[in-house]
Amino acid sequence: MSENIKKLILGIETSCDETAASIVAHYGLGRGKILSNIVRTQLKEHENFGGVVPELAARSHIIHLENIVQKALEEANIELDEIDAIAATAGPGLIGGVLVGLTFAKGLSAATNKPLIAVNHLEAHALSARLSDEVSFPYLMLLVSGGHSQFLLVNNIGDYQLWGTTIDDALGECFDKVAKMLSLGMPGGPKVEEMALKGDNKRFKFPRPLLHEERLDFSFSGLKTAVRLQAEKIAPLNEQDICDICASFQQAVIDIISARSKDAIIKFKQEFPSIKCQLIVAGGVAANKGISKALKEVTLQQDAILIVPPISLCTDNGAMVAFAGAERFALGASDGLDFIAKPRWSLDSEDMRVNQNEL
Ligand code: AMP
Ligand code: MG
Image 1 (cartoon, rainbow, N blue to C red):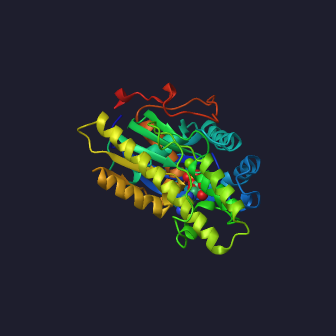
Image 2: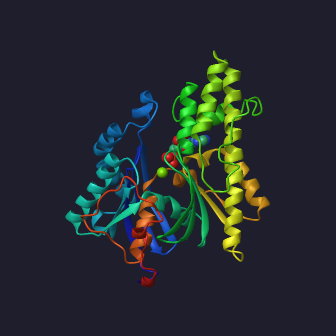
Image 3: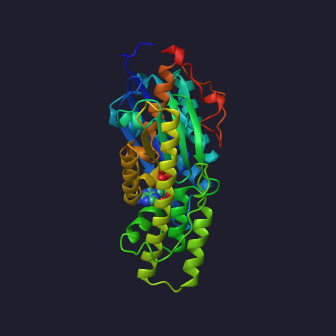
């Protein structure tokens, strides 16, 4: 497949609480341009429940997706006819939402005769840095979002190794739950970060689970419980107590992420002694300035490179789905209309592989 032919790809994302669509122009592997990137967040719809309600999320995607796709086409100034392929998140995620986006994409594909590309949401995150930055394979990826916390070795398109993951809560989920127990509202992450800026990060000594172990996994559930027990112990909380809890909690998170990232970089350097380690961070938690500052320090100390793509690409969006679809399409991949949506879909599974010989 020639590298120079421009392909226009529509990307659809509905795996959690963002209804998103985007048009990406793809000029060959690693070279994409975002022509539109429309995201409608459902934050307000789930606010009163203190978390995403899967059934409500799916219904909301049904109501809004068509309009969001229309907007993505309009903003890119592209007619549906001009699209070369339709990419949609096919998992992992909240299955009701995934089904809405994938079924919509299948319908479009059947009606227009354009190929369908079923995209793994995690692959879309993993490749998104190639859309915004000069990144070469292999690289290390830290994905910290509302649904995932993991280290991935990104060897190539379709070729990933999971180096570590959370054994319980995702980090973003942990931020959200801490915010909820302190009645800070949603989205929790930014609220906790804001309060932490005014607090004493040494007042409470919260646990740093799994840090004594060699594996690169995370565990945040014990930390969350420790925060709850501490808050109950000193209740009723005044404003300064809340700020101190947030600061001490965030410091525990920073220590965990820093130590784990250092270990992951050391492992990368052992496996690839002649390649400079690039650490890519994605997911909504990447917006946390305390965490990104700590990661900057770790990468500096380890002579590695830190890349944090723009936050609009770090959180859930359609451009990363379009781009991942485009990269797979350029390698000759496409999927049948019988592709089954997957609530769980590990990136290191065999069905992620694409034929690199198509190059
Ligand atoms: P995502 O799942 O990638 O869409 O990201 C959403 C998650 O990121 C939510 O759990 C947010 O609470 C979390 N988040 C967003 N901003 C921040 C922040 N500044 N600090 C910590 N977590 C954050
Ligand atoms: Mg995500």
